Length: 275
Ligand code: C2E
Ligand code: CA
Ligand code: CA
Ligand code: CA
Image (tube, rainbow, N blue to C red; front, side, top):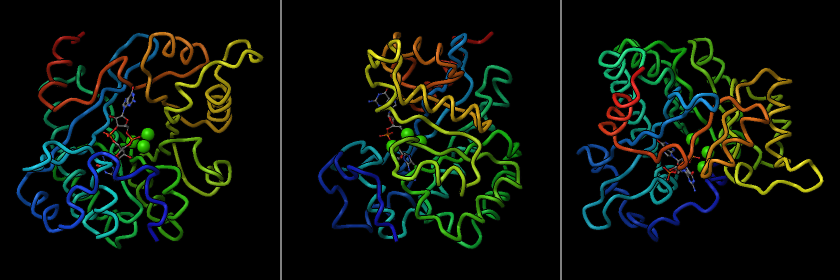
């Protein structure tokens, strides 16, 4: 049922850990998996409006591995469940710590990636509720991201999304626009946000469309019509940022603003930019 694993998965380091799922289990238990955070900024004034938590594995032999090198393995073996719980809990812990220390300069929302496999666990919403309570995090400040291709495999787990929304969390469709039934999914899946896939953020403007990148333009119109928040990801140049801003995007992330960084560096980022 995980046939729709992310395109191009396991490209980071050829099959790292593939022969030894136990290595990943051990890494989760011994704290060798950790989170980095990428700022999400306002296109109007560059203000930090949020952050996305992205997992890494500090592998004893291969060094720090990107998620594409081990998430597909985790999904196949079910290790995504304990890994995802670590990610959610650690992200909430960090988020609460930033809030306590930095107040208004801290990110207003935190985006966390989640796999359908996790949503299919009977007690997932319960786990989320408990963890938010433990860290006294307002559910309205958490956005759960599901890739569009993965959301197609949700089936009955769509009900879990409804439960999570009832708790107050928001749901984002990641890599938006890359799926084959985007409109169907918007109709079937309870979502609050779409994240424009970086292939569209970076697409050259079409000469016929007054120099506007066509899919990015269509997606913001769709989002506005459906009253969904839209975030553009993979912004690498000031030109792209300006294009998106003029199309109506309010927030974005990408190397142009900041790369994903360890928590301590995001803390510095906040301190440097404190109002
Ligand atoms: P994603 O959610 O689409 O995350 C964005 C990816 O694009 C990140 O790669 C980020 O480093 C990269 N990126 C950000 N800005 C730019 C840019 O301007 N240009 C380019 N070329 N790339 C940019 P990363 O961290 O390697 O994550 C890859 C994917 O792994 C994520 O894609 C997400 O689907 C998955 N993933 C990451 N963390 C988790 C997790 O905790 N749980 C689950 N289930 N999946 C995760
Ligand atoms: Ca994401
Ligand atoms: Ca994405
Ligand atoms: Ca992706």
